[in-house]
Image 1: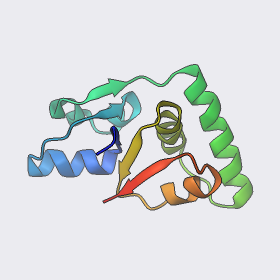
Image 2: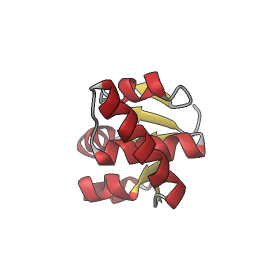
Image 3: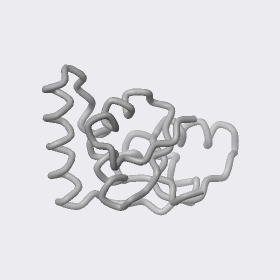
Length: 108
């Protein structure tokens, strides 16, 4: 599998089931679900470039009529900027991918 960036929904499921994950998550996902720290993932703190891309993502989604949360825009930006595959259960990341083809997604 390519380098994976895990979204909060997947982190919650992994913690509940005792599943082991390899890869990354973001500091924002840890704020949403602190037990993510127990999973042994590398935690990425978003950079200025990530936040700037997240603003572009957010603006594009609002224009399209499918706004997404600020956290999800930042998580998508982190994945894009670091060429990571975003592993998620949230279908709305598909909306982001429609406008930002470089977003690599794995829906579980």
